[in-house]
Length: 189
Image 1 (cartoon, rainbow, N blue to C red):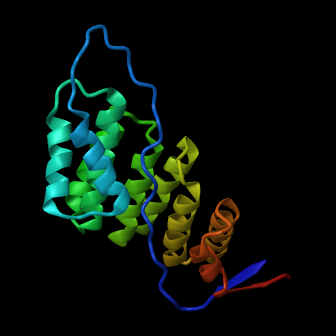
Image 2: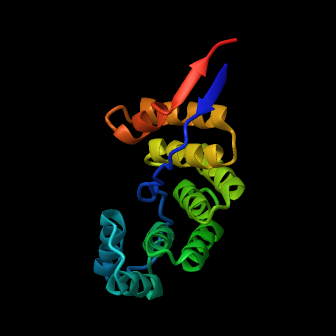
Image 3: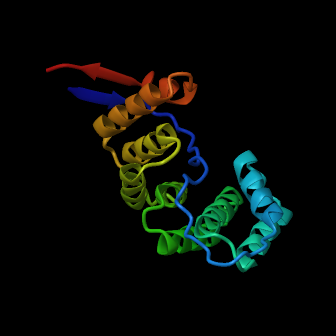
């Protein structure tokens, strides 16, 4: 099969919110202000990029007594806000910290991959996104889409085509992969 690509830029979409991890047991009762954790998660999920959103995420991270899950998720959420602000250094620092705390955090790997793609570091983007897909993510369609964007930029149209198809299969109602697939012509040898 040969896949030819037509020239057109594709949009890059961030990954979904951090998938659940089992929280460690806590022997004592700790009162934690969950409002900043929730506000950070909400800001990241709706795409807010203001300084107040970053501040609330920072406040959540600074709290003692957060569960392991909440701490990892909050680093990922703050990283997403920074990524959307185009503050890639801060985003990568947060994704790296989340991965350091929880190496199996697929969402952190996928978001780190998206950040690499936005920086035109496509090989890193493919590697990180692949790792995230292997670990499991809440919205794999967007991960496959992002990887397809990077593969296409690297000149690997066949892999990009396969990943756009996978994104479409995983989320049939999403138009972005369908639109990208319209640009390809498939011929059999």
